[in-house]
Length: 409
Length: 170
Image 1 (cartoon, helix red, strand yellow):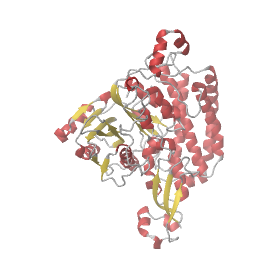
Image 2 (cartoon, chains in turn green, blue; image 1 turned 45 degrees about the horizontal axis):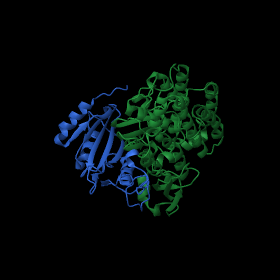
Image 3 (cartoon, helix red, strand yellow; image 1 turned 90 degrees about the horizontal axis):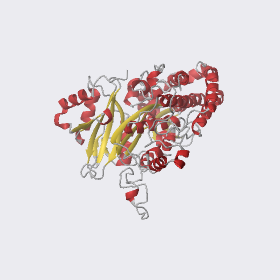
Image 4 (spheres, helix red, strand yellow; image 1 turned 120 degrees about the vertical axis):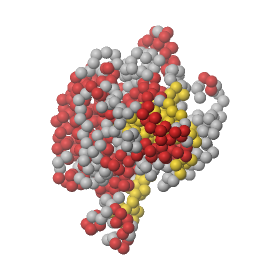
């Protein structure tokens, strides 16, 4: 067996059946429903014994036609659609969409909204990365970290609840800001979170990051070079693991990200271990950002003064003529929207989440495309696992953090 | 760090110097340069931008299709969004295609990542990327013989008579 693994992928492909131990090539279906895919997508592997010779991917099992749906929905009705893209970090998608509409309509939001958004987005990034890194552990056979880290994820979800009332599909925020200010309960839970997070997280980190068995399973597995990753349009932690320091938060700062001190961790080899380590470090950096934003939270309104886009208060709707008019106009989608074409991107948990929107001035976008990082980098998967073993393929898949909702739109 | 190292004007003038009349039209909505090129020259333009030493537009952000049923003879538009990570500037290259023969050359030889983006655009708009290694539907089933993102497929039941469309947008 060892002799085959040491061969390059081209040699293996050329070798044919006579040169191999098993002597025959088997077809193996990994997925559509397999515990290691963490979602519904299929890989048809051609394997020789344990060694993968080629992969055929099938995606689209949970395609829900979001781009088509968006063409019939008014701008504020599209936010719930974005929840269902990367459902491990819905607030990032929601806020990314709101920023896109604000860019199109030219809405300036108060500084407080920026900081509130940064806090929510970084919480979401932590939740997403923690699930990903702990699941790498699960697929390597270490379940403990996964169960431990979910206590922290629960705290984050409770924070979402205090802001928007929902946990998974959050529909957080509104075009122009938030529907309400941070509540006293939020502040209480936030302080608790800031207090307990570092120690609990480091305990989880110690379980894996220098664990001999874990390192043996992940170092050098599923590697990709920086050149190939860029050619495949990788973004996010998977790109940074190869050593490219591209981060939308730094390159094109939005939401006042330039106010905060934080580092962009990069890896070197682009393998599973580097992807794990980059995500772990990003969690620490996100915590740093949250701390700065929360401690320096500016005074002011929690939404922009844009009655054309931002729903008025309910008691005003019942008591004031003007608020009632605006309420109806917004609900009916009669908001003035400029004609134009805009691309806005944010650094979501998996990379650059882009919204390319063409508006003809109507009540719905004329065309809306989501640039979904998962969909784009998942196509590199066959290249990354050819010549590897099946168990390595499983680890590579979980370290890429392919989320079926984002993959299939 | 957030500032671009080159301007849209520089980008446009280099493109015009190289391709002359092939740069049919340009605009800058929301600060991003858009250029229209003839459908048979997209590959050439994208390749020039990728290989150029000064522009370094060597990152493909996404490929999108748009359908304008009213523009006869150029109903479909294919959009390439390119990005220079070094110069921190983005731009779009667009080409219009007639709906009877929506063909454009593939750029999978330049960008491996274009593979699924082109398949997705084919899946939803029926734009044919000539020379693509595996041009088949990706998110929809292969048996589907129409392209659902085209505007002739409305989301709502088109036979409905109880609604006056003047009051309900498109």
